[in-house]
Image (cartoon, rainbow, N blue to C red; front, side, top):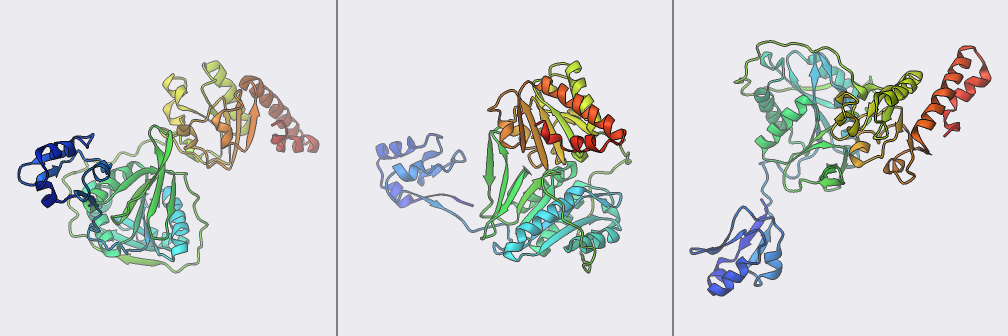
Length: 419
């Protein structure tokens, strides 16, 4: 790994006063006087390189080691983990396959899919044929349900066989449990909850995600290790169109150990709950809403549009809306055809969860609200006055549309007229 190298011959030639001066150069107390080596660097070092810039010439040197996890730095290809339940793949799998193919195309790299389970041959062939990817599958009775230890072993075995440059995993409950274990086993980096990905010409994967409380978008790379690993939220990327013509490419492999110290006592399928990530139209309420009475107006608009009501974090913290309806970095990521935000300021934490919507209509009394920077249509004014007008006009248009009045039907279809 990269680190500081000390010229010990030069360090031994320094006087006590000079050694003391060098030690004080480090604001993190990482440089220590060592009776045997003259100087040493402890684990507090932040690699700020101030000791190199301000210390005696040639005393310190920054060294980048080419050592990796044993995987060739020239490794190619992008691998996607296939999460599945009851024979069906999680939709995030297809979104990641689409993004992987997009990233790999300029470099001419292959795209692989990893499927771990029991008797999942049909699913493997279906994914390979529909999306033209090479699927590697590990079948074993002990892998029927997700267990961290054997799944990690199978994942690492796949990496050893294929040696992909990058690995993408869905940021689901399973993905967030599995990916860190694999990264730790391979001694490589992992960026969680990415919202964007880029691939450099040299193969470095740029992993982009909100950081420092969502105040910046961090661009993270793992230049000295392979594979590069990232988990990505559902509804961040587009799923590719099914080909339904490609010849399936499926390769089977075995894992040495499928034992686990965890023994499931049983499987209980939970009841289906609300998932706003699948809503095609969303009415999102922000800090402007302070009561259930005000929220009932938003619900009325949502009912007229066949939409789901969602919110920003302050409404959940105030106990006005259930957490399952929260959008943003600490909530759900959504990608509806239409989202109407009402009184939402548009902090990075919120926009990270909805900026990929097809059409964004923002209503806010502050003309400088950040939400307008991502909105396709902006409405500046009192939220509740505008909301009342929207309800009135859509109600009238809907009534007239039910009465088969063509003129009013056109007026209803062009909702942007009011905006």
